[in-house]
Length: 102
Image (cartoon, rainbow, N blue to C red; front, side):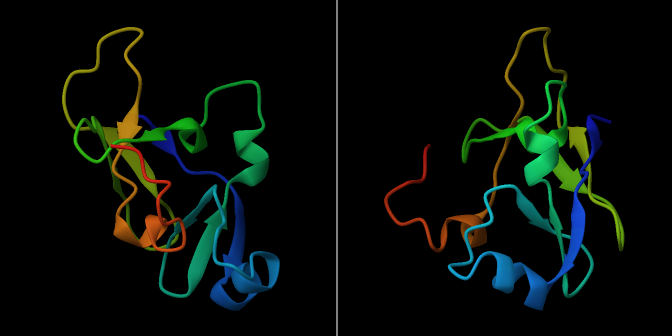
């Protein structure tokens, strides 16, 4: 277990009111019609899963959970000092053409 995603719980409608372009950089889908906005957690001085970076090919963390919560788990042994990486998925990059990192 790496951690649980923390953030304000928004309806899909509230998400698009806050982010009309659909680009909530620290948002993650939870249960149907619900988004967790981890923007405030990402600004914290201590680690939260909002700090996990993207890699399409070198990911070592996976998202899981049920219903209201999203949890993150190591997909393999992670060495001390190794960067935590998650494949954000195609949906995240939909409105970010040309910005995806490998």
